[in-house]
Length: 231
Length: 257
Image (cartoon, rainbow over all chains, first blue to last red; front, side):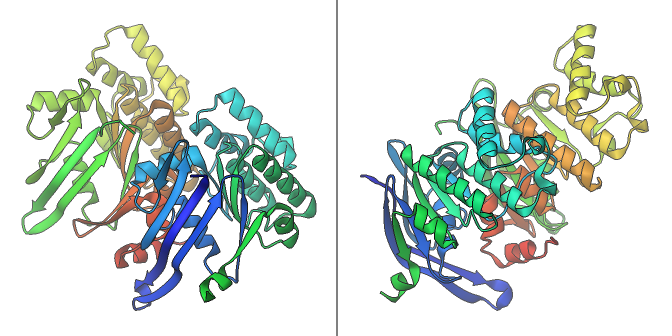
């Protein structure tokens, strides 16, 4: 199999018990395959299920049905059926995820937060620090902020810390949920360049980018979820 | 992934009179894993924790702990002496109220050193050096080693209690609302410290909390309890971001901020 991710018949709905049990169907039998090294951009109106797909792959949302086969080294893991421990291992080794918000333990300084995923994947302190520093530098986070906790950083700075955390461990698959939403042109360009380099080392990317400039620069293929649903 | 569970709990039940405090609870905990138990007061969290840590005998079910020889031992069917030995050396209990976990009229250093002596250490110099190192690790001023915990603030007492437990290098730690009653800045400090220690020492932990923010930052897995039963469980971020049951949805949506 050359696919990095193979999704078959993915079903995901939400039952809102606090709203009288209303059922919100988001994904109905979605199938898609992403080859290693591709950059697939998910498109569609708000509520079409773009983030839901990313969260299902990451094991954050629990699907109602279907399979999500994710390659990890020589094997594959079906995230829809995996145990919590298997999902944690898969995340650590194979999945980098950049969410829209930075959610971290207060009081921990920025560079330590960025180093964390690399350390968990087995990098030494020195390697992790070197990679974290290189990313923070390229993402234009001034060095005087590296030793401060990001709680007081601006929205854009926090988002760049988040991006650095997603890239630092160099996992083979990157899931990006609007990573450039609150960035200015200079930093968007930096992210585009970092994603190109990630793909250069063979990484597979699935992302949601509202920004046309970023989308056009990184996408090797786009998937329109509205069209997918109508079909 | 070939690792074996450190703790295996099967069909645990405990009642107080007609009240079912916990019922039909089963779980496995692996080395290095942090499990959170959440739910409102009276849901059975603390009863479950006390059954797991050997403080309270369940009516049904087993709690098995993997000893250093690799064999599972039922902690409620072993001798009192054996259970106390394991409690002293292999696992630790951090109480919600530091008064339950510390000896208030023994010096801070004495509180930490006592656990080491209980585990067999006899050399005074080494005990004192370890105590100093651990006070420093939990960010207490080592110069206060001879002060009584009575004179410490609540946050300092809680950190001293954690040092007292971790000094003997337990493999499993039970924490009951470890940051309850502390102000927010001290809470963040203790959370960060616990998370770092769990990662650096590879210890497994079971944490009871009603604070979902604490659960999100500290735990890998979550069990949601209601009326003595586990109503939902999974990876912490799954349970908090995609809660399935009505009670879990209510719990998650009730959080302020």
